[in-house]
Image (cartoon, rainbow, N blue to C red; front, side, top):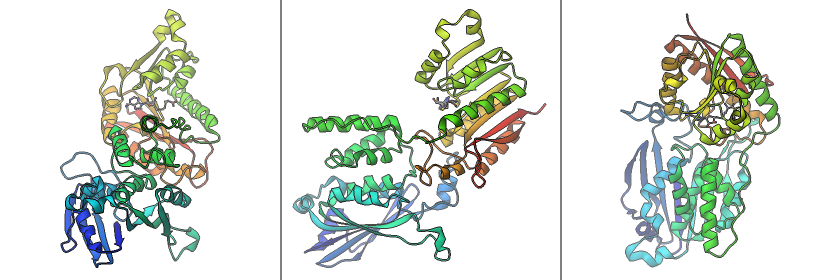
Length: 466
Ligand code: SAH
């Protein structure tokens, strides 16, 4: 991964003072997943280029850090070593952190002045949204150009590569250019190597100060930077609105609901719940627990089936449980019903005796909401401690996403999904989990199957061996 900044004009070697990096001395910094090298491929009065080369260790990413018990963040085969990604942003803030603040001691005047700068970002992933490069960078005062190549010269029908080499040319302050690139690389490359939490809102607002509040694409930038996590996006919007109101401007409108998977959604939900109910019925369960029950759609159906004498719903979200409570009208239910149905708050990643003792547990579209490092805890909580005779688990089939027109490659179906699995990945996980805990598992597909990609939802029914 390579990021360069070229300064043209007079005495351009002074770029070294602003970056706090001596043009005569290449430097290397250790980062958590690799090394960052800073060097100057060209230095002259009229033209000086500083380069930041990032050398990421792909095996390290796949394995996880030495000494850590968790696995890595990415598959062994990943594009992280050569794509400009959130790793590059992290490297920029680490290596050019002072330059990003604009502090330049003896060279403050130069730092405060707009300079003729050209930045290039190599291998920025952005499939299908090239026009967004213009929409995002031009309002910031850049001339935008980019080139791309075929995915594979031997197979021109595979189309263009999703990576572009981006060049931005403008008369801007160095600190602004660095802050723009810092925020905007992860906007285009959505696969972030860190978990997006509230501190990312702080970073976005800090580095977006002065340019993001009034950017015509601020909604797009904010949503994409925050990995489309709705809670965080709203928080950022509130704060941006405050900044605007303070500037005497009208508050921006509440952003539209982020990604929503299109057609057939309702239909698919209904089919999924139908398949789950059929699976619970066929295992002969009397006591059933719905883990991650959400607003209680499955519970509502279970309630209508007389064979289920004991039903429980658990969710980590109080709000969801409140809605489930309303939907099931438990407030007004008679004693018999209240004995039959229990709702409680809890997390699937903590051992909890309340989830034990049921004949079947349903985990419908929940696992993909768990942080990957917490999956091992989930496996133990459900398959080792609670150990119900049957577990019915569904999760999206990532391969099917190609059928959703508004999803790009690597997009997740929902802003709160932490991952989605292909059929092979799901089977692999399920088989290993079953084997470890003494279960067998069989698989089925839910929804209209596509010949190549399979069906939208995949289901595993785990049965405890006698
Ligand atoms: N099963 C429901 C809801 C799916 S949405 C249905 O099919 O409609 C995912 C649900 O998982 C959300 O309600 C969310 O609050 C819940 N969830 C996420 N993490 C959880 C955890 N660690 N423990 C329990 N529930 C969790």
